[in-house]
Image (cartoon, rainbow, N blue to C red; front, side, top):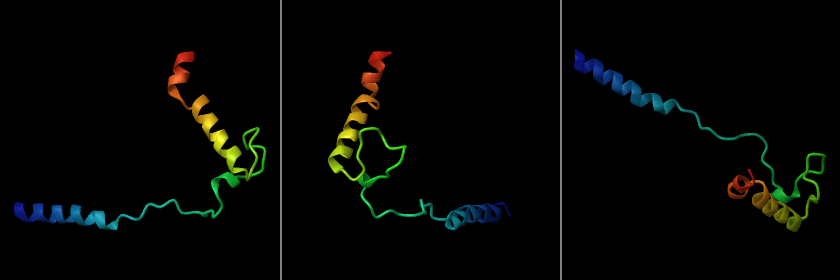
Length: 76
């Protein structure tokens, strides 16, 4: 009796994983390049939408100035 209930429980646990739904982002997918961006008040100052060089420079500056924990820790 115990062996059959153990078998049923283990089968239920194994089969419960089969009901998992795919976890995708969904939503609208954009076909434009990231540097195309938007032209609104939330864009970083000095960045020109559609200019790839300006976008790359802004990313590099942000990485070096605000997202580098080594330089941020030294100033505190």
